[in-house]
Length: 224
Image (cartoon, rainbow, N blue to C red):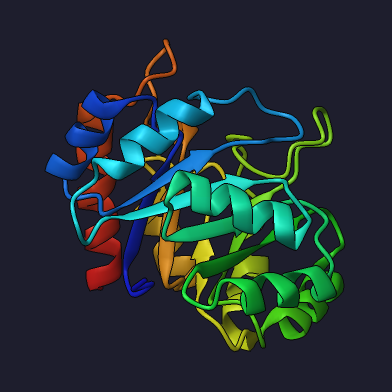
């Protein structure tokens, strides 16, 4: 999985939406499943069927709160995904076990920003680096307890510091939209960006015009 100038869009609702995202130049699709807080966008069987239909070269990412290596590996196998993004309270030992079980699976560890937790995040970035392929910063929502897909930004200086000190690529997420993604990239200099709610219409579906603008503005940001 190539994290350089990555643009990931999460919360794919079906094949037609996935095909639209691919037409707009998105090559990394996220599937949030087995979540602690949010409602899922797809049934698990539907997600597996969609992943099987994706063209070669498109990365499919299981986004989950699972925190046990065996269960996570089995679920990733059932879905056929190329990567797993872990937002739950997984321990370093379980993360390492998952790496041993599935050496070919890209592993992305979340670093969820809360007020005052930069030292903890830096320690996690160092602790998980031996087994992680990348990290993703996201925003905690105290109202819901959600550790991602909150639609909220955080202090980008925190993500910038994590980019600076991390041994692995860092993807930026949290409240990104077509209007702020270029500014966010300039401020943070991440390896990639991830968006979920920031390109959705009122029904929760991905809006093609918003997706197109997001991709264009992200590319502009990476090109600076």
